[in-house]
Image: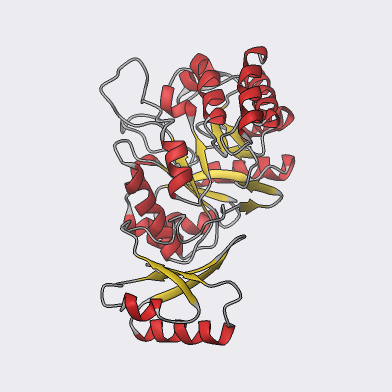
Length: 353
């Protein structure tokens, strides 16, 4: 349920209403937007007397909402959330690029890649220390040592670090990690999400292999409900009957999510398509539909990568792609731009070869 307050509502009356609502067993959360102030009610609102609320001097209107996710819902939080990681901001009109290897293989490898993606314009460094693999015989990552190597690369280059967590018992190892990634296989690991909600670190939450948009938002709700408002959503492809690509990148999820939630949305084209030569095209498409950024895999020697070399860009290809993406975003191709500016930007894409 959402209560729209009247302009210049008396603050003492508003406080009284919120106190009464708490007495009814719901938690009121006041959100001051650029155009209006609302109070979102968290909890069981079935017993709340709507007519009584509508009769109050400070209430403009009352609206019940059907979606089970409240904190992630744009109706509760009209303005975009911006997740800040050091000097990097994700959301709010910018375009953030996260790049690095699928797996950390050595200190020299990840540091070399970090310098090279930074030179190309990457804002953050990604790299897997713990790797969930379909086969128990595949490379599982360097674990704690991998995190140490990532932090060394961070110290050398200044790039904030993004890496995946698989077990909440490993949380202490992530003290100096900037963004904790929850992979597709753990999107519905609710106990893990609850614990991450108790942290105050930014969480990058990837959509599961066969999960709906609403299920992704419900998973985000677990983190938000725990008090951690720093959540970034990631579309990384879903499992369909198509076999030509590793997964099917659901780009339609980006505008849908931007309408449904205030949380920033980025795209992972590498895991979606699984073939490096198709990653640039999908990256451009992600920017065109309004994504807040990308997370892409870059390796300095893809043929000899220990994990997912086939989908990894070389640093040279990444640098060229990043430059095109910056040009595209500067032209205002994202759906949030003015329609005339967007049309001009989309016509100009043909020149970004």
